Length: 104
Image (cartoon, rainbow, N blue to C red; front, side):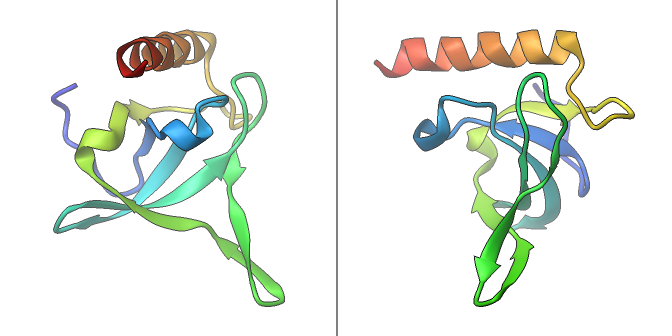
C-alpha cells in the first residue's frame, strides 16, 4: 500500500455510503489535503466509465475530493473492455469485507 498515487491512476475508495458496490475513481489532481477524483460507475463484473451528474441541463463528470486515507487500493488496472480483472475484483471484495468488519 505504500505506492504513490499519480494523476490518472485508478484507485478504490472506501465510502460507507456506497458500501454495496465497489467505489472506484480516477485521480485527476493532487490537492493539499488529498486528491481530486472523477468517480467511475460500474460493477465487479461489468465495465467501468466516468460517472456523470447533472449540472442544470447537461451532464458533467462527477468530481469529488478525498483524503489519502480513504483509498484502500491503489494502481488498479482495467482490462481492454474497461472491466476489473477477476483477481482485482476478489481483492476488492476482501478489502471491503474487512472494512465492514472493523466498522461494525
